[in-house]
Length: 168
Image (cartoon, rainbow, N blue to C red; front, side, top):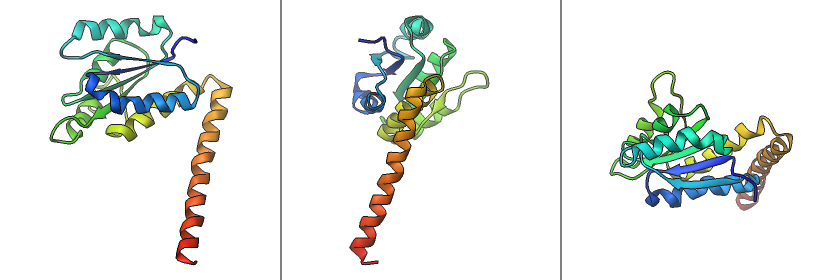
């Protein structure tokens, strides 16, 4: 099996159901990935070590999902030069708004690309990671173009179906 190029990490195993969506998106493009759990608050040294060693293991993009205070993506970004994509997890009574704000409000110099809250965000994180990797892979670029074409075709099909249903 090929070495993973993307690492998907989450603050808790309770985030797995959401973060698996990033994995599904990566699989769609044939991208190998790994998954792990580490916490910015409960295991800060482990998190820093994970981030510092990711590039030397062949990782090229990190997707980090966390809920609540959601500092995981930012802490990882502070310890690596790899692109980090943050996925806010809806884990509190605020339905992920707290996670979104914590993930997106990074200080200048520590960028974290932040996607939507929950499963749609995890899917988009996987696609964004593929787009980053696609910058240096013509074959992956073609797969991404085909994906965009598929999205457009599905809209056309839905439009035709709706028009037939409405008799227009």
